[in-house]
Length: 260
Ligand code: HEM
Image 1 (cartoon, helix red, strand yellow):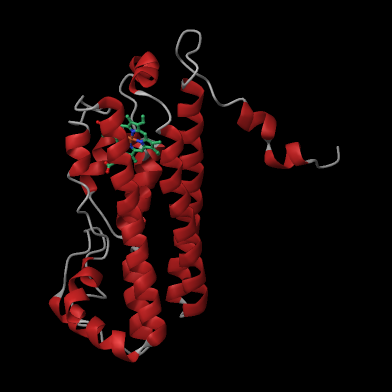
Image 2: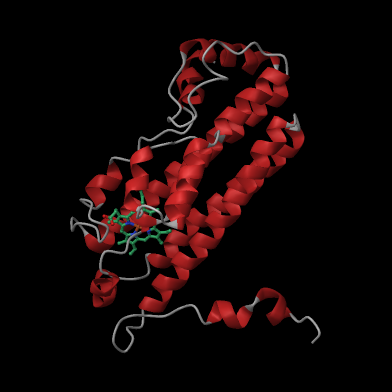
């Protein structure tokens, strides 16, 4: 059979995957499912691009890395904007089917955790939310062990002739990136001497800020939809999420601002 638009994109399969659980079903549950599925598809694309980006940096391909960073940033903007759509759902509309989510929550999005890990925010306790021996836990464990985008960026700087301080290139990649004073000294110098590296640094700050923007919009959406209720995933809800708003992926790039 000749290839068609529908067969190439597996549309029959994709369009059969939205299965509301509420009686009726409730009108708004379809939107809730669609938007989460769309987010997960974009998370998949972001992971694909971040892996490509890290590989480009390791190969010394600065221009390609910069271009890929811009694509990731554009996707992130879409992710932030999509919150607007879900905010058209009122608290009562959400409560009409919320019980049917049981303990399911974005908290358990393994691709979101993989994205955090790939970018540089490692937190091993996230693995405990996935059953031992499960494929999702294995995926996350692989990401935990792998170097992050920040590590690829540091290697790229070294390749460009910058003398990276001890303890940076060989840092324990299973840990979150922590501020490093000597590295900040180097970054301050680099901002004045290496235009291409400075541009990549600025895109990394955009990325960090972009993820924070998503976190901010998500927590405001949660507050307006469920108030101070606890989350279906078992956290304190908005209070827990507010605690993530200060999370920085690349702390050194923020620390140097006052010195530039
Ligand atoms: C009515 C809409 C939504 C509500 C009320 C809501 C509520 C919550 C709550 C309360 C949490 C905290 C964990 C918990 O105890 O469940 C959470 C976490 C999370 N949600 Fe949502 N959410 C909504 C929409 C979304 C959407 C569209 C996404 C897109 C994928 C999403 C992704 C996440 C992620 C990734 C986390 C983990 C954040 C972290 O731990 O830093 N949520 N959500």
